[in-house]
Structures are given as structure tokens and as C-alpha cells.
Length: 473
Image (cartoon, rainbow, N blue to C red; front, side, top):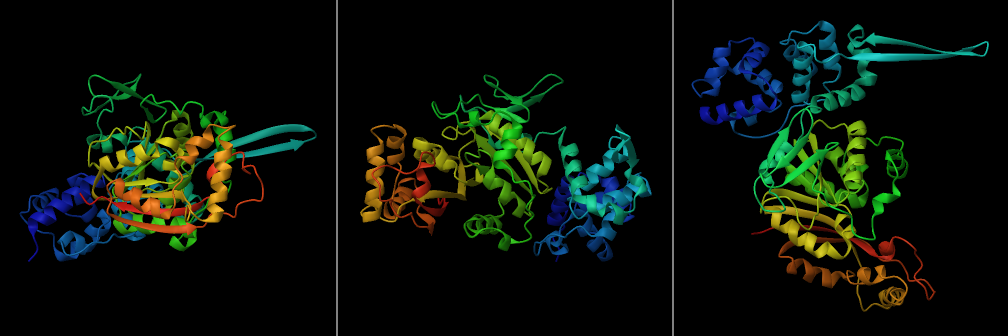
């Protein structure tokens, strides 16, 4: 027998997630608003012929609605076209939204339709022709209303239009609101509230205020003294040139990822966490890759000491990352004093982030465990050596020790070198008894020289391991 109460609860949750009113959902199904109200108060169930279109409109399987399974529906062109027709929009706009249905989630499609209905969104294409005739250079421009194009003509632009739609929908909303209940003030431990007016945007516990500057919550942290690496980047163009590939990589499956990255993807897709906290995000090289494999609704939180780096990462993600399932939050904070409550975050990820904390990496992992939920996972990569007593390792370690005489960085670096056996003990010291340790690369052969061979990237010679740690209590 179908549990009406459970059905009603799921229906309300999915309808609200899609941003639909009861009357709008009723219009999409050609039923009365009173019928939807009865379903949501567990007084009745929809007729069996309505279950499939209802599930497709809401983006969940019939099995899930009836309480016997899970699974999601991809956007079905025909169903989505009928659903969008419930809004007071032109046939041209219906074609435009249908063209984007393969790239946008229902939530964004319905919100876009609502904004079009209110004349808040207007989609136009700008054309430009530059002519140079008889040494006279002229620029000719024309704007075209996209409603003039059919769905097939719009298909080549579907992803770009979808990306613009996501940016526009999110422009008046900061996803930090989605995680505010998980957060606490790093100064006093009190809960936060969110405030926004025409002149400022910030979160506050009542005693301490942290402004949201250019989309990044600024906890007023400073980079490690003497290691202000973000100063290497003078502007956003520097960021793009040094850290952003010119061609957009569009993976189709896990097979498109590198062997090392597959470890992260497998763990993420196995647990499908609703929130991912990325530690020491920097230029977001890891999360930019992994976010492409997320096919469930998820909030990704990027953290770094540098507000400027996060500002650049946000801009690049806004301009280039298309995944309607993912909302990004940016926190310029100290990962050794995270602004999160105990046991609040289901998944923590670090792609070189713990290593970048340098001599504070132990404290940052212990702090990460504090905010991690029971049964939640920390996934990270770590530089390792196979065996400290190995002759090759001994030669490398001597080069590092000798380097201390002329560079203090070598001292801090030397203090965080561990071999495989030591890492196993260290993980237990952090409080994890359930963990996976996968060695993915051996260290290089030591050079036949008396001086350490690298000016930068001191850990370059070391091996690499992927570590997944589960919090059991």
C-alpha cells in the first residue's frame, strides 16, 4: 500500500525545490489546484496516468515518489515543453527554454520561465561585422531577439545560454544562505544571520560582522607571512593565463578523468554528498574538475586564506562552469579555524590544499575532523615517501637537511615528510580508524649532486598517495 503521508512530503519537497506553486504545478498537469492541495495534505493520491508526467516535471522517478526506490529523470523535451507552456510566455520563448532543457535543471528552467513571464529576462543575440573598405574601418552591429530562432537553430548556443541563465538566476541570491545553518562565528561560536541592503551584504553573529565582497565572504584572513603566493597574480588576466586552459574540457564519463583523479570521482559519486567543503582551494584546480562529474544537487564551498584568489576563482567559475546541479560558496577563511559547527559537513575534499597549509597541515586535518559529520569522509592527496630508511629516500632527506643552512623553508618542509608506515600511524593519531590509503606514484630517483635540485615545488620529488578517511564517531 502506498504511504500517502510519505508521498505528500516528497511532493512538497520536490515542488518547492523546483520553485513551483501549487497552482503552477496544477496547470502543468491540467488538474485543479485543489487536487494538488489534497495530494500534499495526504488526503488523496494522483490518478495513475498522472504519475509519470508528475515525476518528469519534478525530476524524480515514480518509484521515488511512491517510496520504493530512487533515481532521477533527465529532462524530457516533450514533457518540459508542455510544463513550460503553463507559464504565460510566447511560443518563441518555449522553444528557447526547450533548447536549454538538456543543460539546465528543472529548477533553473522554471525560474527562467517565471522571469520571462514577468518581463525580467530578455534573451538577445548581438551580431557584429567589422568592415574595412577603402581604408575606412567601420563596425556594424545588430541585436536579434532569440525568439526568432527555432530550437534547432539555437542548439549550438544552448550551453552558453544555459550558463548565462544560471548566472542571471543566481545574481540576486547568495548560496551562503543554503549553508548558514551549518556555520558558526570563528571568533565567538555564535550562529550567523545574513543581511543585505542596497549598500552592503554581510553575515553577522551580532558581535562580529564579516562582509561579502565580490561574492566572497571575507573573514579577514591574511596569507602566511612570507608566503603571499597570490601576489604573483597582479590581475584576473594573470590568473586566467597561468591557471586556466584555453579549451573547455567536457568529460562524458569517469573514464575521461586521469587515473589519480578517478579516486576522488569514485568516492564522490558513491556517497553523493549534498555539501562538499574544499580545503585550501587556491585556484580551484581540483574542484573545477570534480564539479563536472556531479550529477546530484550539491553545494560546493571553496576556502582559502586569500580573498583575491577566491574572487578570481569565482569569476572564472561563473564565466565557464556549467553545471546546474552545483551551487558554489566562497569563504576567505583560515582552515585551521573553520567557521562551521561540530559535525556539520558531510564531505571534505582537499586537492593539494592540506599540503599548501605547510607547517599547519596537522592542525587543519584535526579541525576538518571536528566539522565532519559522523560517517562523513575526508578525501585528500598527500606527498609521501615509501620508506624513510630506503637509501634513495635517505639521500633526498640529506639534501633537504643541507638546504636548511641557506633556506628556512627547508626546515618547515622537512618536518612534514612522512613515509607510508608513518602516515598510517598519523591517520590514526588524527582519530580515524576507517581509512583507505592508495599509493599512486613513487618518489623520484635522487640526483647525483650535493645540492637540492629544485628552486620551487620542494615536494616535487616525493611520491603521491590518495587518502580517504571516514569519521566513525
